[in-house]
Length: 386
Image 1: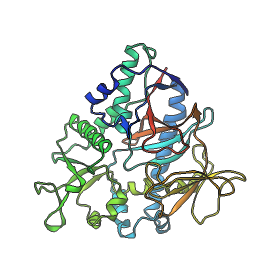
Image 2: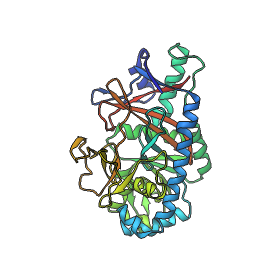
Image 3: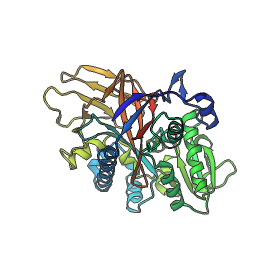
Image 4: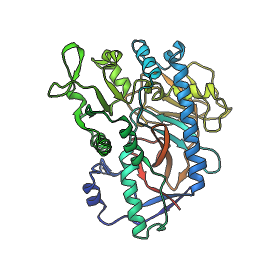
């Protein structure tokens, strides 16, 4: 993996606007950063990223199979008992899943290490799948990168194929909260993929979902919602006023209820428990369990439901804070994971996000930050194979 400077396309702001990428600048700071690019070999992609992604995903599915039948594990994951039966039913009936993203640290020759699995509401989909591919085409045509360069990115075609498998005469609702351009763009993009697959769609803000007769969820015209994609965390749904309706399983949600096991940071110690010393895992343990860190090793403390880098703390071997982030997850149970620092290129630390679509590895997106902790504002940098 090599990082090098490249020219920015002329009229980037206008280009982003034309393609609906209205969050390429966040808080007056650059989010989409094409001043540089990462170069991989095909062998690196296939052997170092694609194969581990596929293997780790299967290991994660094994954890779900174990957890839904184990009360102690569900307690450790802090999933409310009210939903355990519904989650188990969702898994045993194999409610279909759409996508997920694993975050990796990779320092070259050593295997990638899994930092976490964003299995419910992963962000950076639009930029990974669509805008990054536009950059590749323009960069090849303008001689910025070799004309025969490729990109590890079959995300969009796999999304469309997945929606085609899930296609139904009933409309598929696409939902997110008001007030986030990033969420709205991501949902619009997914809705477009579903339409390309022949699926009738409707958009609805989460705040506009109504409650009809008999506990049915409805849209603004009082039509009953049967199938819906939501860019809204499952644990938030469980805490909402209408959360108990999830137990009735009247709606087919994407992502399904069983994803609440995988979107939980407690997945990490469970993976290590059942696959100790796996080359793509870091030692991890629940709070209150014996530390698995080596002498003198730093650790990371992560709340179970932390998102976008919120309330993450890196501690040295003496429990002194090296770095930490603020957030809304400070009161939640935590897990610990051995610290593996992200590789540094110049003043930036680099994270690889590996996408899974329909249970198969499908592409990557790369994020950079001046901090050791990747956040929602961390810059997105394109990549190519060549």
